[in-house]
Image 1: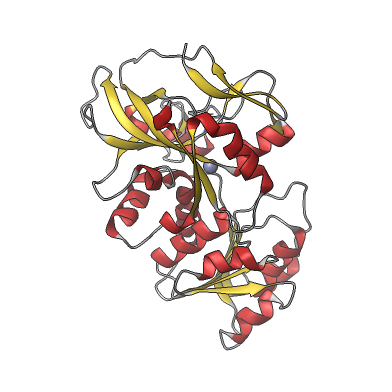
Image 2: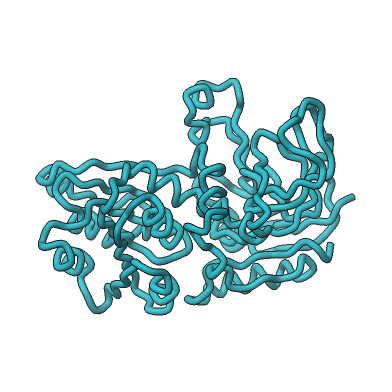
Length: 347
Ligand SMILES: [Zn+2]
């Protein structure tokens, strides 16, 4: 039996043998996993045992941000070859569903997503995955970067939903990993500059190491005021709300320019009030984001071109044998940590 990092139940991880599906069917590939990123959702399942309606009722392998090498091809796979370096999109929709046919497979109710109960994740040395959701990495994109494509795809989805125009000024509320991914995607998508707000200076510092990202510490300054001061009083063409807090939801509506756009990326734990009249008085457009669809190819192209560099966001890399330590480090939530990764090569 293969070994994997298994969430036995809330607060209990084990690196142990577990029976996993292993048949390479038509259209599938087998992949030797090289690198897996630890995501906030993995950590949340570890510390809370559930996310909203998704409850861990049986042992589940964690991990959904992965890159590796193709080791076996299923029948009919022609766009990949054994030895290809690849990254994998973790959500597999029902290919016959209405959502998939419409191109919005991320909102297919039948989607099976790695490490979302009851589906096992990819923190195991070998996985079988549909070739259609497996993407070849260019020579100059590392496995570590390949494993960053998943969180970056959320930024790409947000920037795409915003319909950015060249030169737009954006505000991102929340400088966590997703906030930073969104800021980088917004710049790559044509924004001239991006303000980013948070409560914690260290997080803002990581973001502000990139050019054209301007930090706002909301314990000292009002984000909407700073944005207005920097835009001749007009406001941000696009606000990406990535904090998921009632206060920042209000800030988003205050900071957005007339006829601008607010993209709701963060997920408030409980329903939050929304000032509809303020939104109406500026006739703003609102968009929402749920994961992503059709973003992997574009995200990989941006990494390969050098327009987007995610390497500075990889804060620490642990060996597979130290996976539990990697998770405990992620639980610490050090303010300077953006992404913890696990290297599977000692498996
Ligand atoms: Zn993730």
